[in-house]
Image (tube, rainbow, N blue to C red; front, side):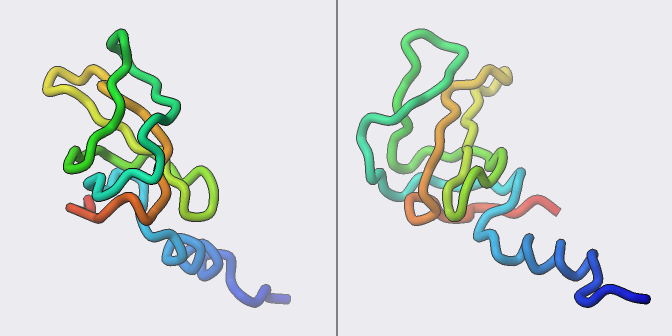
Length: 94
């Protein structure tokens, strides 16, 4: 007995439903909330700003993405959740 849809098909459809994928490079294009919860390796943690870029870590809910911005030496500058409407795709890693 085979399953329909095949499990790999279900995974592909779920991935296509996401606007952004883990490791996508995205740019902040608007901020619905000026003050948001931010994790950081610096104190005090800076708030994300329009124009900054970061990497998608994961989709935490429908159209809500955890994005990380790092310094050149690899320290986490900020890690915060964004609505999909606040971001634009800059580059998709292959």
